[in-house]
Length: 263
Image 1 (cartoon, rainbow, N blue to C red):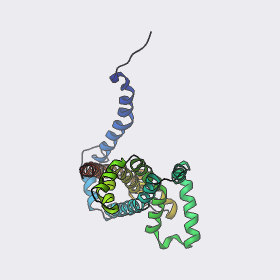
Image 2 (image 1 turned 180 degrees about the vertical axis):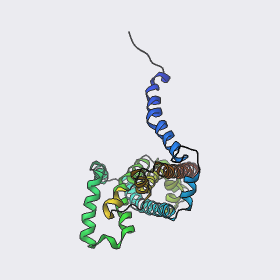
Image 3 (image 1 turned 180 degrees about the horizontal axis):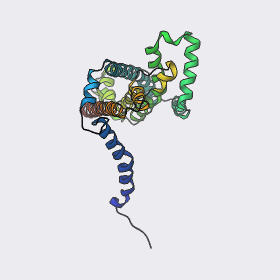
Image 4 (image 1 turned 90 degrees about the vertical axis):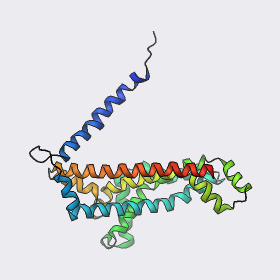
């Protein structure tokens, strides 16, 4: 006797998982964000966030680190992925594996190794906290930018490039009008995978400088001090920012891809 299950039945375990491990924790965070120590509803937690120089400064610093790290990853990853995907190198798969191999090593071990390298090169990390933090973010998140870009560029239809050449477009125009727009899904995916964790990842900053001047560390410091209301409030604000950025980048990616296909 064969058992047959409908799609709805097969989706029940997934729905239970979402309710227990996504929706329920989020509701708990929302509860603490909109209540005070006595359990009463309040928006004072959010007012404190936007009036506190500490939280605003940490948010701006986190955004600056994330933007700088994402920019560095794009500058390094796009040419690398383009060369690997569009060239006729025999062992380009091996080269790709070498680029993403650091992902197989423990995250903290990579940061510790980078710290030792920076210590030898500079002697004192305290002189360049921002630059070294961006370097650490770039080093750790670069594979997340290369892989989606390589996947998108490798699947690029050569007929579009041939059509652009037949219409008289040179290499630069072809890249700007065809290759770049059609690679936007991979670029947007890579930007999202680098930018979002760069805003909240406090391991690099904490291991390099023992500092809490980033959003993830600030949230952790509130929870460690048993101030769940302020910590939950910052988490909700950060979640809203991430949601807006994700929505905006996805819309931009779809628009540019459609434009590239038309051109």
